[in-house]
Length: 263
Length: 263
Image (cartoon, rainbow over all chains, first blue to last red; front, top):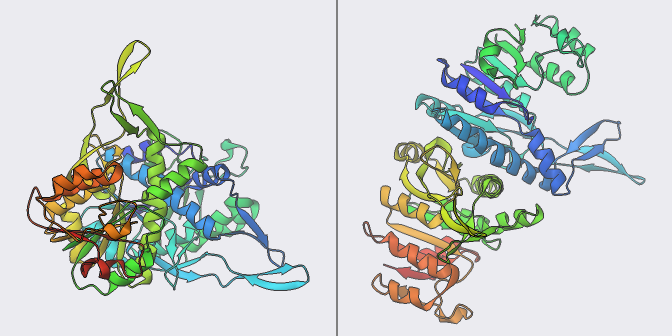
């Protein structure tokens, strides 16, 4: 079993991915992002991401009700359905689901962030959290009947609210609960780069022991990604391939070792 | 088996519907609109509906690529997921699907509209069409496993394009293919009114023979709705209830005969 994680950038070649997948023999599920589409929509609607800073100086995105609606529109709506459409055109029996559908992915809502308002301390709580459980019987039901689940946020919290979460955490819990041997992570870069501005510094192989060291060499989104990938190895073995989603044959290239392989 | 069709207006009481449904013994599926949300989004994005007029003088909405994306965002995204969330909060095992997911509802794309451009006649074709087939095995699979499908446009055309279609036609094909005895149509009015501006003119019962006559007395959306409802009776018997979706107990009221019953 393979998890194909499709990054949320606009340069990702969805049709190339769909074509490659239609020739794949192994079972797989798809988890996708839609960052670019969310940001574009948010900008057009005049509702940019809200960043809040806690009293301990930690900054994070605040997922209020508007932010969740933006996720529903861009992830569960626009991007999910366009990916499903591309898969169907390539004869793949795709079925698009958000994490809330049939309680596919459920978790625990974050308790809140302590912020200062004037002289007062207060706790504000958004709609975000961590996935803790998958509806394994639903995924198995679909896979056994030859459907390919195409999954995106939001997920469900303990009170049945739709909440935001990290896609890497969604991949991780799916990987732990299903019999996943390979995670293909398609991004807008050739793989893990020693110098993020220089594609020729692609690192072909990283052992899971080296992961922590590499994590310290990078910053921003790639740092968080490396941390998340380390998590993939905590329960059970698997191979993680970080590879270019923009090329003509994203899946074939990934499986033939063109990106970064971590095992 | 019941089909609950939820209108796309903003005053529809989704929580009331969910609460009522959670106490219902019979199996049901939900088909919903999102007109209000689509129009609101389109207006905010500065992309209002395009109306085109054919050479024969017939006006219709033109569903270009932008319009389909608007449908994906507002129907499959925002409204579908908010309805699923409300159902889950009421202990209903809802699973949201567009017509393209798993080829749930597929059909034939319209061939195009003849328009005049200056002195030239040309045919322009949009992404709209008519549903012709449902994936009965998928719906049955979900129902047999106690999931409640929550369905919206777009549907799929013969070349696997996501296309727009009339919700009434979606309800009709589901009604014909599944063993549906009752269609509950929840709208922003008490039912079918003799005078659309006077709620006291509610007509409690219409025989299917009277439908055609009533159709001639109304105009606009209600006329099209009556035409669609006539279609429900072409294949097999059923009861159609047009009832108020804004009240505290929309389903209970509908089933106890508070709206208009057509049989």
